[in-house]
Image (cartoon, rainbow, N blue to C red; front, side):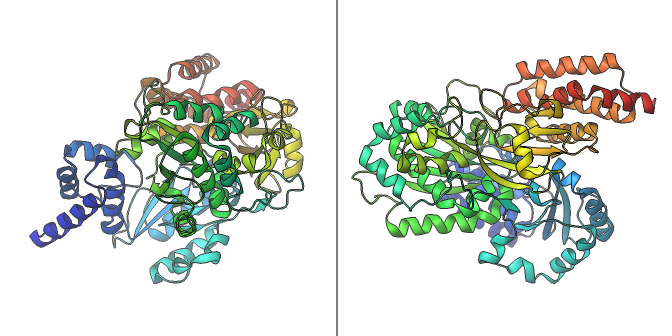
Length: 575
């Protein structure tokens, strides 16, 4: 690198660091900006960033090496990421993958000699209803076929056309194929609601009564953990600190889940309003939307909503309609790490660290972002809040069950006639859901994504609810011809790649389970060893540090339990 180039890059980094007040929590967006401008993050850039933020270069490298969207090696002008999740696999992604390699003359993980294209796998793009899906820089391609690959690459080479599309035309590219949210005759949580109806009701009630209304509704976190939302807000409200935060977890990375994508594209103002209500209730003045890097194309839409709210006086240092309350929201992008969907890993990421889960306690409501009380809720949770306040807790509790109140958004993909997003009441049976989406002939359903459980046809009478089979929203349908060992292998490949590696049970356990799944595929796994692997999976559920390691064995355990004949039959056939 020439001295003039070094000076120019150093000044660029200094300006970026100054924008973030030379604070450590600006590290990730600084690195993202460098990567975007220079296609990689050089050794010199890492050293300069470290110098500006007064941290060691090794710490910077540790962050760069953790996130899949960052790179120390030069990448192409067009970075292609093909989704490899099971839903895209069922839709024929292998043919698309081979054609990409044929057209570009490179393998996955490589860059073309002319430096124009880099080819990578993506763990999940949140487009499971429209697979095979592909991301080229920040532009989405859905229902990709091997025949379309050439046209897409030619579009890149010409560098015009699809890549300059803005506005509504762009939004249509990633809308849900099927959705009953807008046409739902049950008039659920996403029926019409006037803007600010919920937040104005909160201002009339006051912070304490607002929290009480959320408690009365029985609303539980819609991200999967199911912790009572009102109770979480109450803990944060009672914490003694003058600085508090509200964080929207929009790092939707669970394979088979894409409900948050729809909410952020079609109902972003509802999400923002829910965050404002939470900020008012707990006494926070700062909000952050942590948007997964794969959803960067949603950034202009969400930013537009924030701008309109600032113009109308319902976002900023002084909120219209209430004294001494100001609330600001900023958007921070993730950089490709599934584990950051865990709330403490997300906070670590926001603080400029590797996204590794923390030990708890203390919990974020006591010591969260930069040590301050922090409420972290899922996109869907915030979207529900305004409706609950505007229409009342009793309205919300009319749907669902006693322990699982309200409605739930289901992301449905796989072998069914009508994949898409559905708003349905908690307590619906799996069979009823399959009837709605056209998956009556399914032999199994994966509830709650790769980290959930695989339910066989004999158990389709079970209800989807916290007291029976809980879910974060993902429903993947497997038809009669689906090879369940391939399903298991796909999920374990995902977890092997996405484990942060911090704890031994998860770091090594997923590798061993994947090896076992491949042995089953090859017909060389004994029943004795299979039972040892099942024991390992149960140990991981207990001994792993965070939810990733605790739930990653679920699919392996449930598939080997319920499809023993299929798995052992294949073993005998291939011996």
